[in-house]
Length: 261
Image (cartoon, rainbow, N blue to C red; front, top):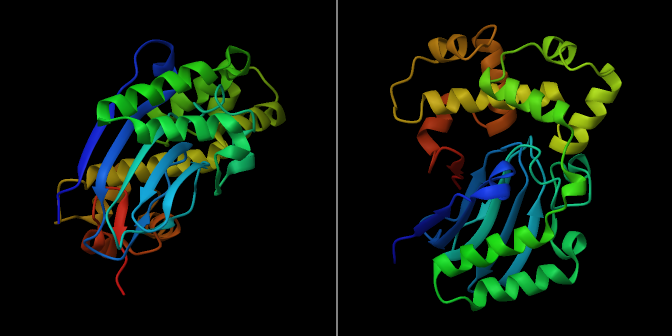
């Protein structure tokens, strides 16, 4: 079995404000039948090509739940990983309308989705695929749909605090009514500020254990801002579907878990 390879591109210029990275994965999967993909609270565009099922182009909305991925056969995929709230200039639908959903990209981009999909797979190299995808994003970006600065500020504060800053404190500095702030945040990010904070706190916990198998879970919980280990365990199961110790045994990467039979 050929080894899977990953290419990434960090966009420059205007796209860098909204896009975390563009990526291409060749020959992913094949070592086990299924993987559980952990939620990321962001929007992703994915162009995939399987040996049996052919090609597909989808958009995955912000997720607070796991999804399972068929990895029984190696496949290739190319995609865009947006920053929190970053999909707004490229997708007319509010992010919360796509929450915990994966839909065909045609429903969002229309005929452009099929054009970009064909270009991606007609390209001869990974670098060309990423460059074509970057150009397609540039052509679809609408400055008229750039998000509200209050949401950008709130996302920045929540991320810098790793989800530990009280939402009431964040909202109090913005100068909008609570209802207006919540509506804007959910429309652009796809989650409530509280749910987004929970996910950022959980992400910080995963980052803290990324390089080890010998984990003091109580220390992780307290250092990442959880009230106690019980609250930490609750969030872990909610976002992973497994206990912290099971996560260590089954992780294929930071956000992918091998699903045992």
